Image (cartoon, rainbow, N blue to C red; front, top):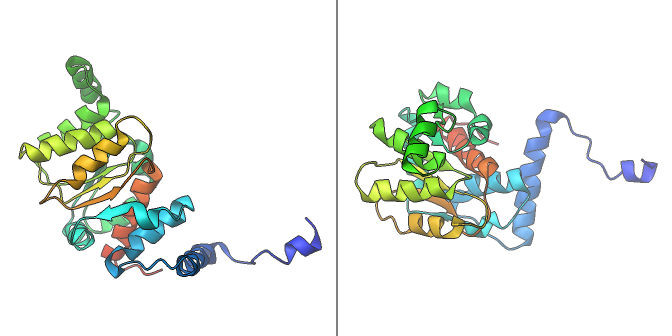
Length: 220
């Protein structure tokens, strides 16, 4: 590395990097003339921070009051169900435990694999069925499997679940966009949905963390 290149590097300690990253995000949003609603700002900025993709400033859709509802649910000890262990690993479980909640993922459970095989469906679908059978009202964070999102939609319409929030951000090409659009039609279910093809387990975890940090009073 030349001396000239070194001069362009910001000398930051690890603890300062996240703070500086969010400052840069704010600066770039301002340069793009994008104004975020205060309720949505923390969620959108953390999605951008996770992906370096400013499209999330436009494609994240929020039902009315979704962020406030989710924060209140978390403060009351609501647990989170994910469709991948990757999303589960990315969620700040210590912060959630502080509030009395847990992060659950049933994808690797033997009974889920067995149920999926018997029904001729996906493990993601079967894992949502298992969550519904618990009778608990969860926050659902779906970042990978559109079949999980489709089954959640059906379970809501059947009156079998009453989610505190559905985070619908599966990534990909097959059934991804329709599954998200179905969630957007739910009238009495809080949701945060990434319209279009973009998303992922990392985005699902980022949204959960943005909500968690607000619920626990963490400020960037």
